[in-house]
Each structure stands twice: as C-alpha cells, then as structure tokens.
Length: 504
Image 1 (cartoon, helix red, strand yellow):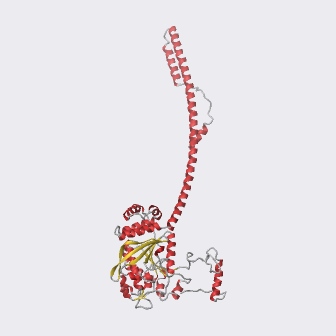
Image 2: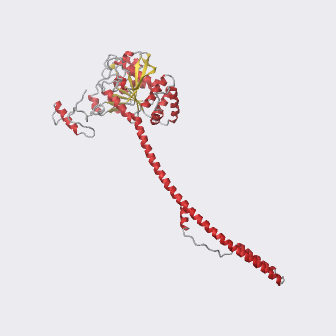
Image 3: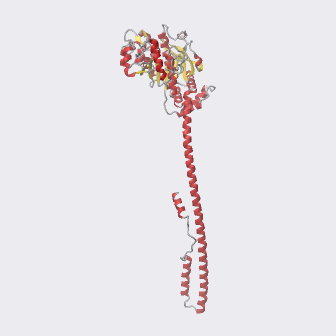
C-alpha cells in the first residue's frame, strides 16, 4: 500500500501529450523496401523507372501518413489509460484509509465488549456464589440417584466434580430442575460432564449443631458463619447433622425426606437410616435419621445424656457410611469437638481405603474441657479395634490410662487441628488450658492452629447495640475505648490497670 501511495504522488503532475521522434518499425521496413526497389530498377527504361518511382513514392507517402496517424492515436490511448490508472490508484488509497479506520473502530469496540463481558462474568459468578441453591439441588438429586441404584458411587463422584468445576455454567444449564425426572436430569448431566477439565474444592462439616437448625452454644454459629464465608469464596460446603426432633427445620429451603435409605454399622450389625435434605443460606444440609435407634435423637435436648457416647458415635459412623454410599469424595472433612472426633480414627482405620484417599481431616476444638472418657471396648461399637487404639500415642487418656479419650483421638488422627479462640500463644495454651492434653498437644504442635477472636455482626453488631454506652464499628472504633472504660468500672478495676478475662 505504501508503494501505491508513493506512485500516486509521483504521477500527480504528468507531462503534456508528446509525439515520438523515433521512426516506427513499419517506417524502417518501408524505407528498406524502397532502397531495394531503387536498385532493382536500375536497368529499366527511364519511363518505367519514373512510373515505378512515382508509385513507390505514393506508397511511401501513404505509409508514413498512416504511421504518423497511428502514433497520434496510440499516444492518446496511453494518456487516457494513464489518467484512468491514476484515478483508480487514488480511489483504492481512499478505500484503504477507510478500511483502516473501520478496523481500528472494530478493535476498540471489541476491547470494550471484552471488558463488559468480564464484568458481567464476575457479577454472574458472585450471584451464583451468593445463591448456590440450584447447585445443591443437583447434589441432593445425585445422592438420591445413588441410593436408588440408578448410578454407582464412581459416576456420582464424577458428576459432583463437574458441578464444582463449572458452577456458573451449571447454574445456567440447570436453573430449573424441580420438574425434571431423574432419568432426564441424569442424561443432561452426562452431556454436560464431557466438558470437565479441572478439580474443585468440596468441604463437608460433620457436626452436632448449626444455627438456626440446632443451636446450643458457639459451635452452631461457628459452623454456619464459616460455611457461608467459605461458600462466598467459591468453595462448595456441605453440613451433615443428626435429625433431632427438636430441630428447627423451617429455615431449610427445599426441605424433604428422600425415598431411599442406607445402612450403617453399629454394635455388631447394620442399621437402616433415612436421609433428609435441604438448603440453608445456599449450603447443602443433610440430616441423618436412625430408624433402628430412633430414640437417639428423639429427645428434649441435644446433649447431656448418659449414652451420649453411643448416640454421637452412631451418628459419626453413619455419616461416614453415607459419604461412601453416595460416592462423595470431599477435599476436607471438618469435624468438631469430641462428639464427632471419633471420625478421625474411623477415617484412617476404615474409610480412607473406600475411595477417600484424597480427603484430609480438620478437627476444631471449641472446648478442651469436654473430652469424653470411656471404656476402650466401646470402640468396637463403631467397628474400631480397641487394642490398636488404646495406646499412649493414640487414644489412651493421659491421666487415666485405663480409659480412652475421644477428643484426643480426634487430635491425633487429624491432619490439622484448630483451637478456638484465645489471646494466648500455643505454649501458654498447652500449659494453662490443655486440661490433661498437654503431652498430646505438644507432640502435635506443628499441626495446631489458633483461631483469632472475632464476632459475627449478623448476630451482634456494636454499631447498632442500644445498650452500649458508645457505639463503634470496624471503620470507627473510637467508641470502643468508652465501652472498655465502662466495663472496667463495672468490674471494679482501677482505671490504669488492664487484665484479660477468660470465660471457661
């Protein structure tokens, strides 16, 4: 194109038409012919030569005239072609400039469109994380497919990974699934699963409380708050609870009883269990209801019974059997306090070989004072070997060696342990607040994590509490000093003094 532009500049001022001074090939040939004729007629009579020369002269005149006329015509044609070529070049150059401008405009529009798509994609992903109800409906439907025998556990695991990896696309493709039959839904999932390329994160809490379904202490708000926070970060979070008769299940969306049952081992035989499912704050919730031991959770309180070890050991074993039966392979298995700490040894002694090799166990200790000491032979109720676990480095209690310590077993058999919460360092906790677990905590010091203090402003917000002498928030903490002084005065402390108060 640059060459065309230079050519157009070079021919913008052409010279006027011109006549050629060089004789044409036809004229030269004619002159050669005349020369040969002249020599050929040397011996002829004069009159004949004169007539011949006259004829030749007429031929030459006519040929020269014809040749000059032809040159004039050819020059005119060349000049016309020259002008046409110049106009065409200028036209093409203008078209080129227009095409360049249009291409630049298309590129700018493409860039703006890409930025807009990225913004919409981010907003859409945030909406899916805030409201993952559709995803959990799919998960719970897959569970029923496994329990009914429609698919096996391996296929269910594959489909769950598809859902985790492609949450946004899944949300669009399966926005309405309530009226679809299992066979139709399964066909669509199989078609969609062809796009799977990467692995996601799946976290399962197995615990005894969750706000507002079943709430006694800080565990309930902790489980709900942590699950919501992890879900907002893009993790897929599930909670498994016992089905208490006193539970408040009204907060669960899509709460329903599944049509299928599963077996779990306890006390030397297998027992039937029913599964209830629902969604709370976008978190999948599974409730396990024992059918043979119906009285375990059909009581007026959650804790405080002589058979609490049997009740919660049964629930822990049933939860693990449920995970294996449905083919779930979570990345993290989160257990809480002694009530589900038995899952630690259960996992590594029995279930890690049943498709859970990629799962890791996290144990949270909300209260080290509650540890549950029991006779070693009771471990056999859930299928564990008492002789292998009743050892100092495993579940044998540090102060009462004839008993096993359930919370100690959870600490020993977990990959990570979280101690809730404290201002103290690890060493001070081990020496002051371990309640007999100091040797165990010291041995497993490297996997211990101390959770910082905090509060859930959805439950209590100091910027709105009318009973505080001064309000404060994370953005403006000036009122906190006033509240601190008032608390000191109420407790009888001197103004300059400071102290840390523990509620044990």
